[in-house]
Image (cartoon, rainbow, N blue to C red; front, side, top):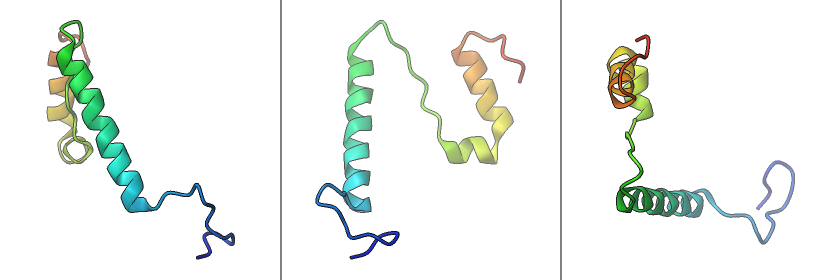
Length: 70
């Protein structure tokens, strides 16, 4: 099926498969971070930043040890 004027290449990955691969990669990265005591992580949801940027900036500041001009 044509995509942007070209036929699908054998290496093309459809959107559903790409989403699955990304979710697997993200889960693996989270596992690696959780398994290493030398790492700390803060999950930030894009929608939450858009809906309440000050609250999320405050969370980031607290995570970084304050000092961020919220």
